[in-house]
Length: 465
Ligand code: AMP
Ligand code: ZN
Image 1 (cartoon, rainbow, N blue to C red):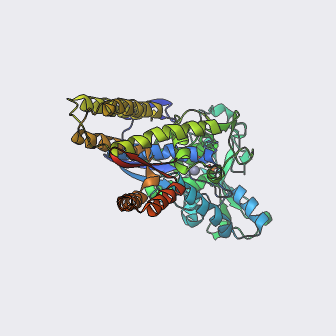
Image 2: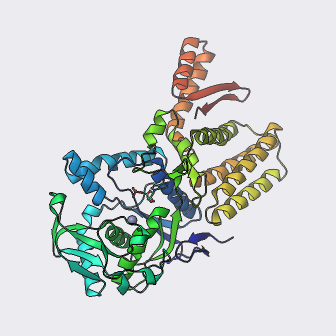
Image 3: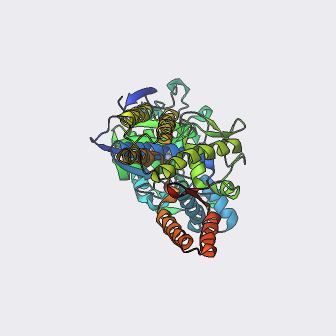
C-alpha cells in the first residue's frame, strides 16, 4: 500500500508525494510559551513524532521545524503581571518544554525558530502584502484584507458570502462567527509597556498568524510538504497562514495539512484556560514514567479524540511491560531448534501489517496489533525452544526497526551497559560466596527500578515500568 495521509485541505485521503523525491519537509505549530505545557499539547506533538519517525523508517530524509511562539497577546498579558522581561518570562516555559519533550522521548526538530528573532522577516511580509493589495494600515496597525484574496476559506470551508468586508478583528484568537480582516501587525499601545519593535512599518509587534507563515517558509521554502497542528488551529490560524503566505508569494504554501483531534477530559478539551489539565510533571509525580505517558499518547489515532484517564495510563503501563519484557526475555534466550520457516513467516506478516497500518494515515492501533500478535507467536515458539539463535537475532532486528518508529525503549539507552556491568559483578560476588556484596548490588538495582531474575539461562533483568 502507498503511504497515505488525510489532507485537511482537500478533505481526502491522499498518497504522500513529496516535492523533492525522498525528502519530507514538515512544519509543526509549536507551543505558546506563556505557561507550562499540558499533556494535551503533547498529544499533538506525539503524533507529529510518529509521522516523522515513520517517514524516516521509510527512508525519507526529514526536515522538521517547530516554532516557539514567544510573543502574542497572552504572553504580553501574563508577562506583565510578573514584572519580568519578555525573554525572562518565556525562558522558564521554553526550558520546561524541552525537558518534557525529552522525558517523552520525542525526537528533537531540526529548527526551533523563535518569533521574536524573526521580526524583520515579518515586517517584510507585511510590506509585500501591502504591495500586493492584500493588506492595509489603520492607526499604525496592519490588517489582511480577506475579500481581496480569492481563495480565503479554502481550508476551513468558509462560504465567501459570510465574509464581512471592512470589519476587523485585532485579537489573535477568534471564532468563525467573527471572520473578518485580521491583524498582521499591531501598533504599540500603552498596555504593551516596553514590548515593541521599532521597524520600517512603525512601532509595534507581529500578530500570531504572521509568525508561522514567515518562520515556516524561511526554513522550508515557499512551498513545503506537510503542516501539522491540533484541530483548534485550523481556523483561523492555518486559514490565515495560507492567506498570508500565498498572498505574498503567489505560490501554493503547503501540499498536505494534517490536523489532530484533542485530548479530552470528561468530554472537554484539556486546556489551560479550563484548568482541567495535567502537565507531564504532574503525572511523573504520580509515579508514572515518561515512556508510559508516551505509550498512552501515541496509542490512539491522531484524528480521534482521546479521553484521558489514569486507568488508561495503567493499561498503557501493562502493554508497555509486555513489549519491553519481550525484548529482555529474548535477549537472554540462547536458541533452540530451527523453526523451519515459521519465524520468517511471522516476521513477514508482522512487517506487512505494521507498514500497511501506518501507511493508512498512521493507523497506530493496527501497527500495535501487528506487533503484539507477533510477540504472542514468537513467545509460543520460544516456550517450545522452537527457533534458533540466528532467528532470534532476526526477530530482535525487526523489533528494533519497529522501535525506531515507536521509541518505547528510549529510557534504557546508555544505562543498559551500566546495569550489565553490575550484574556481572554480582555474579562474580556470588561465585566468591560474597553474599553481602551480591545482595547489595541486587538491592541497589531494585532501588533504581531494575528487577533481577535468576533463571536457567543466567541472570535476566527487567525494568519496573
Ligand atoms: P498552544 O501552546 O496552545 O499554541 O498549543 C500547542 C499545540 O497543542 C497546538 O497544536 C494545539 O492545537 C495543541 N493542543 C492544545 N490543546 C490540546 C488538546 N487538549 N489536545 C491535543 N492538542 C492540543
Ligand atoms: Zn502556527
